[in-house]
Length: 298
Image (cartoon, rainbow, N blue to C red; front, side, top):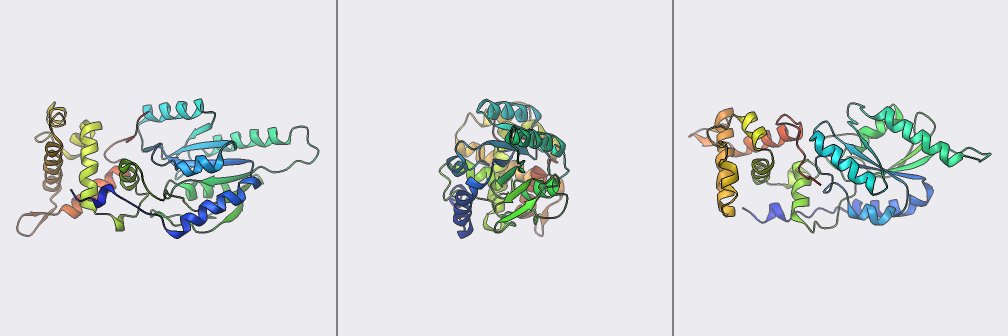
């Protein structure tokens, strides 16, 4: 396996500006809404955000919860609540959870204005790493296409104050990533979920790494989706991972090639089309076609 895939560094100039922007504007807001990807709740939380926000009141949105494991969603929600945060599971793309969010925000606004003659609207900042669904959430909250959305990370640029339907004020910020991933698994998890641009990745290597993870954590879903009974029989995967890492690599490659054959991804000369297979596996993981998967457990 190449070294590149496990040493992902991606810190464009605008990420540094985002950090400064958050620091400058934090004192102007009552609340921070942090959007994370429920499939990777640890990897999609930037430690810089904790450092910047500190004691400011926070709502953590477990977004894309329709794509992740329901039991894991509940466990993560309980975990974040135990740390003193408000938590909401959402699917911002379809608008699921938006009513509950507004109820939560209206309660906070009432608390802020209690015993005050001059009632002020709640002001909030929305933060998160690229491609966790911030723009989709903002569009749902404002009732219009206020923020740019796209499947590719890094679509939102610059700062903008937006009016929420109920008169509250919302500050959007571009996605902020780490200067360096100390844990290579964090970089891989973000890449699996599309928070790092596919264009800078070796997709065949990335899909191979994802297949390894699925073999360990969700073998039954992998078998079912790609009809891999002849490759991953009951017990095969657990035995494979008791052996050295080379065995894992070989098993993952065998499964990737089996997927290509099942789908007919064969090039002239009976060669495996690894690139097409890789894109298929990544796309089907990201859309939950393989199943509801959470890559990080409590």
